[in-house]
Amino acid sequence: MTPPSPTEATSSDNASNDGTDQHGETIAHSAERTPIDPLAATNAAYPDPALVAIFEGLRSTVAGGQSNAWSALNDSARLRAVFDTGLLEPGPHPEVEQIVGLTINAVGIPNAALNMITDVEQINVGIASRSGHIGAQRTHPLPDSLCVYTVVSGSPLIIDDIADHPVLKNHSAAQSGVVGAYIGIPIIDDAGHPVGTLCAWDDQPHHWSSGEIQIMTDLADVVQNVIFDQ
Image 1 (tube, rainbow, N blue to C red):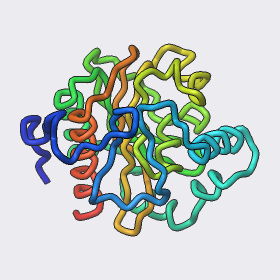
Image 2: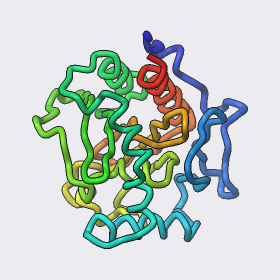
Image 3: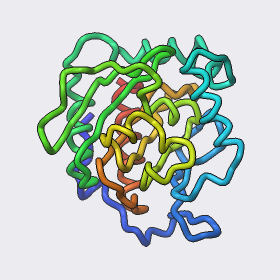
């Protein structure tokens, strides 16, 4: 499948289907998605204690403990869905790599990637960077992953300034200065299993507009079509 052009993927900040919370902050949503958890990440200070509990539970899980987050990651049907994508096989994967490359141009952000999440690690299957420095390391342990939080919640994770995030401000990606702002959209199969994320990030804080969120959501839908409908 040929991915849409940036103009086809772009939507206005004033689009009628954009949602806002009581503070006027944008909420990412998609009528086509079937997340495994109804919790949605917003640009606000994550007031929902259940969402914070998921994040905190996952932090203990990747450190060796047990939690509901571990159950979600280790679900056998989800893991089978991850392997069935075929993206864990050695690349290249030109169709998804093309979409990742399109993402940095369509959103106007320095970095983007498509990552698969197993029960033990994050596996990068496509990455693009305006700097051209993408590095050779394509696997990362879960404690170093931000995308794992998107997969566990089954919902978009949107962070304008990670230094102000109540849970992730101490994450290694934040402490190292690699990530200042992040957006991750879950890639979900037809049975509702989140297998990975299409994500983008900047090393500086960045306010994600409703238009940028919609572009990311649209491109994640294209990725899903490429992976699961081929």
